[in-house]
Length: 360
Image (cartoon, rainbow, N blue to C red; front, side):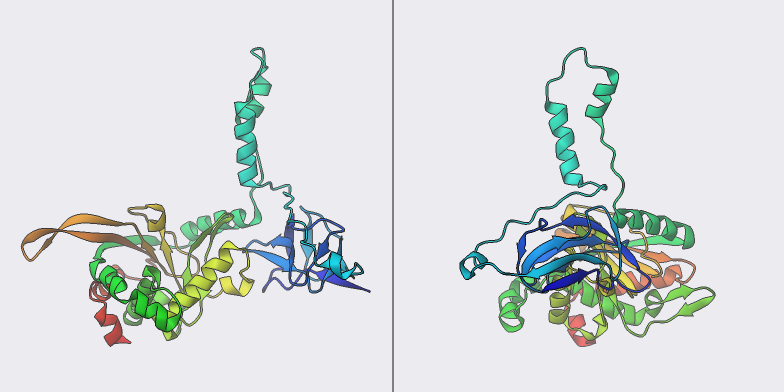
C-alpha cells in the first residue's frame, strides 16, 4: 500500500511552484511529518512533509515546475523490521536546482580562484575563474519586480525623526524577568515598537489605508507586516489584527512568524493582507535609510540602530541612546502633515512608555 504526496494548495492565484530541493533521496526511509521536498513560489518557500512513515519514491526532480495537486512522490508502507525502523534516518540532502544555491556558488568561486593556475592560462580560463552566473530564484525575481512596481506606481516620500529609547530600554531592564515569568515570552524591542505603531495608526488612520483604482480603502483592523531577512531574501509575514493584541500577544506572534519565515515554513496566507509594515535595518547596523513601500500599503516604518549621541535636555548636553526612524508613505494619499504627526505620536509613546498603557 502506498500514499501519494501531492503539491498542496499554495494560496490564492498561485497555481504552480518550483521544486527547489529534494530533502530526502529516492528510496530513503522517511518518518511521518518529516520534510521531504522544498517548494518555492513567487511569494514564499515552504517544505512539504511526509504524511506517513515508509519508503520514498520520488516522482519529480529538483528544478521542475510542479502544479497544485501534482504527485511529486509516493510513500510505500514500511516493511522493515522494528529494529531497522528505529535507526536514525539519513541526513537530509539538498540538491541545488538550476537556480543554484548562492552560498555554494560563492564557495565554488572562492575555491576556483584560490587554486593555482598555469601562467599560460587563456583569457577564457581566467574569466571562468572570476565570475559565475546563476538565474534569480523565484522569490528574488518577485522582490525585484515588486520593488520596481512600488517606485513606479506610488508617489513615495520619506520623513524622519529620532527617538530617545532610554525609557524603553529601562522598562525592558526592569520588567523582563517578571514579564517572561508571567507571559512565557521575552519583552522585545520590536513588540514595543509594534504596539506604539498600532496606537499611532489609530490617531493617523490614513496611513493604514490604501488606494484601489480611484477608491480609498479604509482598513478598520491593523494587519501589521514585519519584514524578516531570510537566506532567500526579505519576506514580510503579517500579524493579523495587531490592534487587538497586547505587547505579550505581539511578542508571541512576531517571534512565531519570524521563526517560521527563516525555516521556510510560512504559509501563503501568512504573507497576504498586510495594511502597514515595519522593517528594522538597525539589526544590521543601518543608521538611516528610506524604506520602499510594500504595495498596496501606504506606509512603512523603518527602524535603525541605536547609538549613544549628545542631545540637549533642559539646557544641558547629555548622552542618550538615540534611534533614527523613517516613515516612507504614498504622497498620493497621505499628506506630509499626517506623516509627521504619525512619527511625533510614535516618538511620544516610546519616549514615555506609560502612555502606551494609558492608551490601551
